[in-house]
Amino acid sequence: MEELLLFFMTFLLVLCLYEIFIVRRHRKDDSKNKKKKINDPFEIVYLERKYRLDMDKVPYNQLLQLVALTSSLDIAIIVSIIVRIESFFVKMLSGFICTICLIVVSYHLIYLFYKKKGMIKK
Image (cartoon, rainbow, N blue to C red):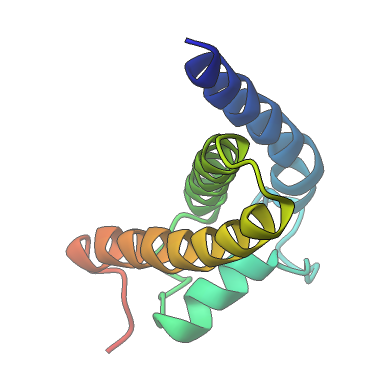
C-alpha cells in the first residue's frame, strides 16, 4: 500500500511541477505568440526531429499535456522501482537503465499515437 501511495504522490507532484514550470511557460496562444519564437522543451524537439512530427498538424498544447503526463508517469515508475532496492550502487545503475528504457518506450508510444492520427511528415 505504501508503494502505491508513493507512486501516486510522486506522479501528482511531478505532474504539478511540470505543469507549472514547463507547460504554462511554453503554452502557445495563437493570438499572442504567432510572431514570437518560443523555445520548445527538449521533449518536443526530440519528438519533432527523431519521429518527424508535423508540428503544423499536431495540436501543440495537446502535445505539451501528453509529454507532461508521460514524463510524470516515467518518473513515478522509476521512483517506485528504485525505492525497493537496498544498495546505492544498484539503485543508481537500475535508475539509469530504467530511465533510458522508459524514455525510449514512452516517446515511441507517443510517436505511434500521432502516426495513427496521420500527423507525421512523409
